[in-house]
Length: 268
Image 1: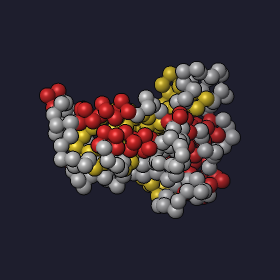
Image 2: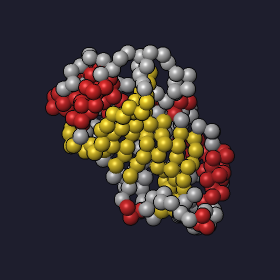
Image 3: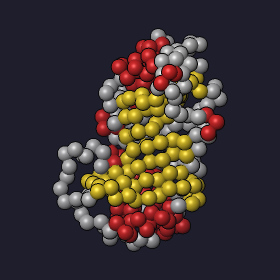
Image 4: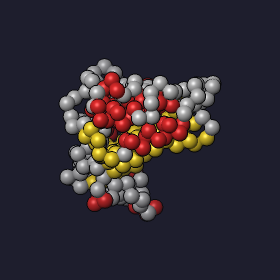
């Protein structure tokens, strides 16, 4: 049977989501835990890749379980007991065999967190990019609006990335001020090119610092050249917040308490 899980992780001590030889990754940790519980190899398919240092609150993963029945509650607890404490299975659900964590996704949403105050924070050091200089937040917010709609984001793609379609439909691009000095940039799109969010944030920060004009986002989109955009912002401020799928999958919908321990219960 095919199972989908919602995975959270703190990327600080992880070398990204995808398996790499000789380093600790989310996939390596998860597949090792699955193999121990299943007593046979299990391949985990992720909704998308996150780089070293990037966090996730809503990474979706699917895998095929080698048995016809499984206690979902027990499986989730076992995985969380085996993996390191910086990775957690938050929800679990049996899905249709045709469900695919990557190819069935219709939208992904990221949040990039910034700490903008004179002094650094001991508590936010691993989750927020610290910018001690004054930012023009109004200019940044206005420039972020130019991202909305369908554009070619080749100027916001790392030059060493794969040759993939760089046209993306952005449905949300918003700068939020949560409290004094604590900022969040939220962006949602049907897909993203490599390092797109971090390069967008780097460009917005240069606009906020007065190093680039407020029209720089628009100019980079139309000019389609990497040097028109700003630098790549650090990884630790970025978090994959959620992945959306067609309603037919009813993914991780709330279940009643009586189903929590059911062998075929939809989730915990």
